[in-house]
Image (cartoon, rainbow, N blue to C red):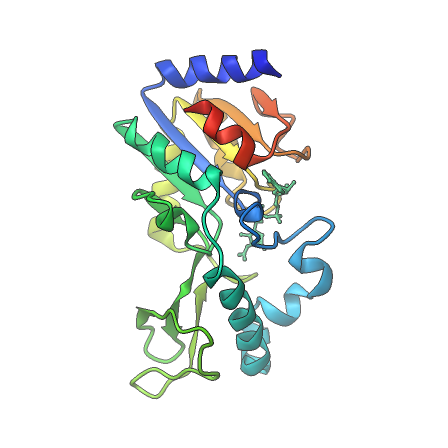
Length: 238
Ligand code: OAD
């Protein structure tokens, strides 16, 4: 393992640009439940009942209760050493992009500045009538929250069946195409188009390393696989 870590450190030392793609696993050691896996959120909740536009239309109260519960968990926890190491890595590269699928906002709390939130943020709400977005950190949130225009507010996160924010996706593909090194940290690599960013980076010539205790569909395409916990491995890269 030490040889592999050294190999990655050498790549990082000489890289002119670094892209880091993160998923729920990077927040796992902070206490945020992941989606898949033994204790994953999708084991006890049906995505179709909670994370789709149709589910919100059918029962906005239920969907908001679930998001309120997640917001209350996230509001009480802190970034872990992986978030802090990623924020530190950002300072060392002129060309750096952090692409996250996480909606918890923990990267920003740890000090990351250049974050593309591919799936939105659990701390942003959007009006289903007028489309206005605003920050909302109320815990608990008043269910059902309303926009000044009277419309119902929803979490500004990407649900199943919805497209990703166009500009965020464009910038993520641009960064991945220009990466010298990409670190894929704590994602199961099954949700598209996020997972395809790793393929894009590899095809464009980047050295791609995966940090995840479990193998994923991306494991066979990466240049280096480090079967480690993000909070333990990431600080050793500094
Ligand atoms: P998943 O829950 O699918 O995958 C979490 C990954 O993190 C798994 O591969 C775990 O093995 C890994 N993992 C667990 N603990 C870890 C640790 N300490 N260090 C490193 N890795 C660890 O989460 P995502 O891949 O982020 O989308 O899921 C992608 C999207 O699916 C989410 O953004 C969400 C969900 O549906 C939306 O809500 C739109």
